[in-house]
Image 1 (cartoon, rainbow, N blue to C red):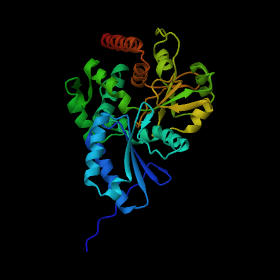
Image 2 (cartoon, rainbow, N blue to C red; image 1 turned 120 degrees about the vertical axis):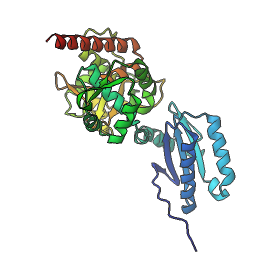
Image 3 (cartoon, rainbow, N blue to C red; image 1 turned 90 degrees about the vertical axis):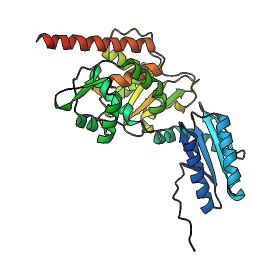
Image 4 (cartoon, one colour; image 1 turned 180 degrees about the vertical axis):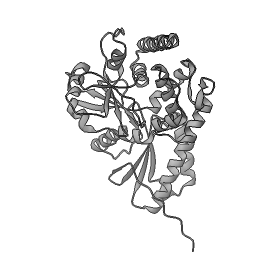
Amino acid sequence: MRTRPYIQYEPDLQLGEWDVSFKTGAQSIRNIRAELLTLAYWLEQAPNRSALLVVVDANITKARLEREDTLLRQVLQRSIAERIRTATIVDGHPEGLPTEWGNEDRQRLLESIPAMARASRTKPSRYAVLEILLHEWLLGRGPMTLDWIQRAGGLSYPSVASALTRYEGITERGAGRKVQLRYFPLDDWAELVAVSPRIRSTVTFTDHSGNPRSPESLLRRLSMIDAPNVAVGGSFAARHYLPSLDLLGTPRLDLSVHGTSLDPNLVELLDPALKRTMNRRERVSLAVHLVSRKDPFFEAGANRILYADPVECLLDLHEARLEVQAAELIDFFTRSRRDRMGTEGQA
């Protein structure tokens, strides 16, 4: 007699009898369907467990998700259909969680979302390559080999080659098949800014104490911490690159952390009152962006402070709704590049 193969499944979170899986930023119902089928296979082998799929900030309507849930239940055995559920979380607000859950279970779920979101997000390689091209162009570094791009980004050769094929209209090849941008590509930059909230691994924190520390105070604390993988971004990095940048105050502190996970001790050392939030309506005091690229492109500054690269800094400004300042910074880099190349040409 032929038996079904054993389904290996590892839940993201376990709450009592519930095995919880997160799906973040899904763009297609096919992704949701595949996750639900995996859970159904798992429940057939685990008769004493229940499964919950939590769909976080998906680009799919609530009605479409409900329809998919209904269709799935029509084809599943009743004993399995009764033990599988789908919940959604948009802007930190959950819907469809098991009614029998208490406040503690709900809180544990919400606190787990940022970490799960980071694990489930993978930046498309073409955007990773575009960021490297932009970085080198803004700083006037000149052409790059494909091998250098591959090593700097920690990418595969096919991924780099495929991305450069996509961007061949805005790039030019030089000696030794080196490549660089022809100009600052406004359309591709606008696309990167638009998708940035989905493809960047960002964790935000707010202060509920009623007396939040200023971003300047958080920065001073950072300067006293031994954190070689942490760089300052956003408004502070913008002023590092362009001291004359017109900024009225500093809305928050942006940090870029080199790696694939955030050490919770870092936030605790900066301010124990800071708590994670996914509610976009709350005032963000600290935003931490994970930079998984092999070379983070951090730049050393004064007082042991590292600064995020210009591309990360610009994306921070856009995320903070400082579009005018971002445009001014781009113009500064463009003029600096033009002046530098003119000087080199005269030499």
